[in-house]
Length: 323
Length: 43
Image (cartoon, rainbow over all chains, first blue to last red):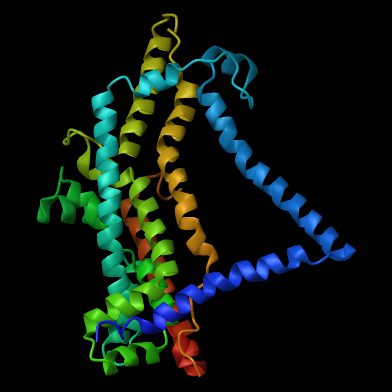
C-alpha cells in the first residue's frame, strides 16, 4: 500500500529530465542551416551583453569595497580597486563575536522561517484549492482581506510590544515574517495545477489526507516550494526594519542587516561630529564601508541562488494523469 | 507630504480610504471574474 501511492509521481519525474537533454542535444548533431546559426549567435551575443550588464554593478561594489577611501574621494568609483585596502572590512569585523552572532541569528531565523513558513503556506494553499473544502472561499477572503486593511504602524507596535509582550524577543520579528497572504494565494494557484485524479488515486489506495499531501502533492509542488521558499528566505535575510522597532538594543546579537545598518549609522555620525570640531578626519572609510556592507550582506544569499534557480526553469509536472 | 508633516489623522484617513477603495475594486473584479469563469475567482 505504501509503495503504490507514489507511483504516478515516480513515473513522471524521471521521464521529464530524460526528455530535456534528448531535445537539446539532437539539434547540436544536425547541421545548422544559416538562419539557425545566425539566430543562435545573435541570441548568444544578446544574452552575454545582458549578463555583463548585470554583473558589472556587482563588480563595482566589490572593487569599491576594497578600494582606498581617499582614492574614491579623489577619482570616484572604478571597476578595478584603486589603492587596495581592507579598512572597511576591518571596521565591520572589528568585533568578530558580534558579527558572528549576527550571522547565526539571521541564518537560524532564515532556515527556521523557511521550514516552518513553507510547511504552513503549502498546507494552507493546498487545502484552499480542494474543491471538497466547503469553507475555502470564506477563508480565502479572510486571508486576502489582510492585504488590504492593516492597523497601521502605531497600533501594530502596541499590539506586538504590549499585548503580546514580545518587545526584545526574536519572536516579534520571526512571527511577523512567517506568513504572507500573497505567498499563500500564490501557493493556492500552484496547487490548483495538481489534478484531482492524483488525490483520488491516493484515496482509492487507502492513503490518509496527510499521506496524500506529503507523498503525492508535495513532490509535484517542488517548483512552487522553491519559488516561495526563496521569497520567504529573502524576506528574513533582508529584514532590518522590524528588528529596529522590536529588538533595538535589548538583544545581545542583532540580526545581520540591522547590525550593519548600525555600523554605517555610527560611522556617519562619528564623521559628522568630528568634522564639526575642526579635527582632521582620521581616514574613516564611510564610502567603502557602505560597499563592504553590501558585500557582507548579499554574499551568502547570492550563493543560494544557483541551487534554487534550476527549479524556476523547470515548470510544474502536469502530465501525471494518463489518458 | 502628508507623512512628512506628521499629520497622523490625515495620513490615517488616506490609508483607510486607499484600503476601502482597493476593497471595493477587488470585490467588483472578483465578482466579474466569478461570473465569467468561477475557477479563476480568488474567493
